[in-house]
Length: 216
Length: 237
Image (cartoon, rainbow over all chains, first blue to last red; front, side, top):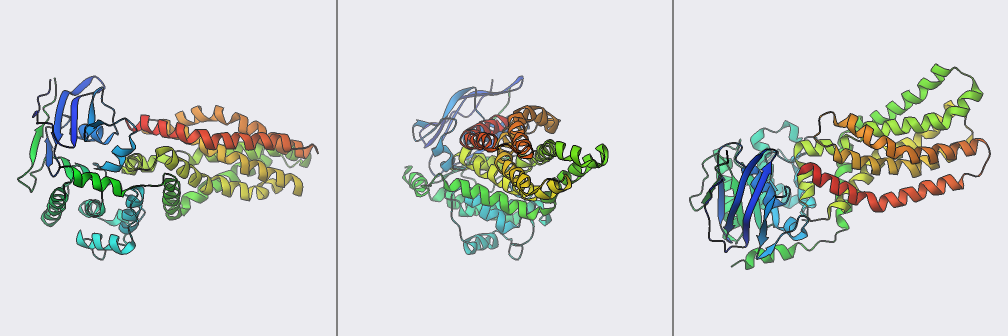
């Protein structure tokens, strides 16, 4: 059995009675939590306890065996269009095409999100994320941290209210983490929500933690 | 309380059909960066088609007799060669997850990706088919039917193949498994396509076979995007 912080589930995002089995292993069961508008939830737990899986369940990439994810009181279906216009998921992989430039990648990612961002806005966001002068460089020539920063630029231009971030500060230097912190605090100040799965210390104190403990 | 977040959602009112162009432009932009890969299928087809005269001998009558079958089977194998690429690289770098999470309907995005695949593989094959046909002594009219049959048939190869490619994502030995899955599905296209060219060789009317190919293509264009989308959801779960 998994124990979890049973939160007062009043916020726009609520998960109720989630149960996920991966192969022979049950990752968690009867997992319930809620995240309020303007709140950050940090998911913690050892390797293999299901942090990434939980983010994927909320995003709708993985279907839970039981339970539901609700947004403003309405349960999201497996192919919910609203869910896809609400969630922004940044996974372990950078989700960048190696052969394209940082700028092209950012524009493509935003186009897929349905956001018409001009070259100027994209270039400005990349500058702000510490990639000035690297816009036209093929992503394969960027370092791990610089690839993460392209993801940060995407966060900066995103209009989606729910951010699901998997190890967002991996490979980022101190300045990058500061930049990430500013982005996520700006997001929550506007009423946005974020769920962050991580092993690393997070640069903000205001966050609530959800600890996944795994099952035998 | 949640008013801010809801406003954010309402800003993103999207026309679903735009997703088709977003996916098409995206995959074409990526293909343009990998021009070498574009040439691979063509080079493969050229080599396979050129091997047969070397193997069976230069007898003109025999070559003309086997031409429809050889060109069509070579086109099938060339398509098979390119299909694993359709989703595999997106799957590896995590962009396929972003495609699934896009607010555009997934079948529409899949249709755009499939068209991009055909434009970069099937279309060049069909356009260059007369060069292959000339090696076998086909004349003008017969070459025209060959091109027409490939134009109608290769989109079906991309569409059916995409289902197989989506289903076998992340599976060990996926490309062999995909071949076993989709080659039987290609059989009707092969029969109609090669059949049309054969009819042209014997001076018969080719409209029946070409119409059937056209019908298969239209049915595929309507039905396969939904199947590809469902297969992707299963593979990424």
